[in-house]
Image (cartoon, one colour):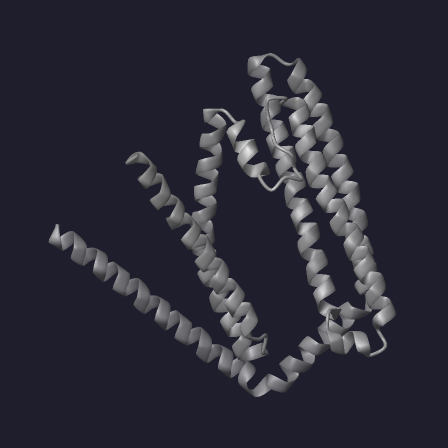
Length: 259
């Protein structure tokens, strides 16, 4: 038992040493590559952002159009699948429910991507200095399209829930309610709850794997590109909130067994 513990400590030490060596090597390489080109890197980033600012409005309109087109096609497919589910027998119904899950997953991913890209494009020119510098009209147009795209994405999510509820009348919950997730979970059977819980745990594991990587990237971005401390603080805060929420849930569930 003691040997096993020592092996674990040694493995952890080796991993930390390797990580430190790799980090040091990457830092040294970055200093060599970017150290003498600080001005050129900054100029390159400025040029890139300027080009994005020039086509902000067409990009935002394009994302909105693509989001609407894909969203409507996706909902149309879900409606057709829902009709099949209501008419199918048990074994065939399982196949259609799998198709429903997969089609819905694609729709949700594109919906989230639409929101993320809209925020990124808006952020390029979303500064007081840029707006005051004779760009208030173009920025106003970009903001209006942004709001329209976000409104569609929000309504699409509600329509998606309603479409699933059409094929599964037993599913409860109002998408506009703050308790929607709780209501939806309570209406699921045990098999569906197991899928949700296992998927949630896998998502938690993935987040704890990638957030430290993102934290390091934000630190490097601040070091070499002056991205600011806020990005580091936000990523660190997300990491802390996710960990605290998971541990709080574990403690609460253990406590319920003692009652």
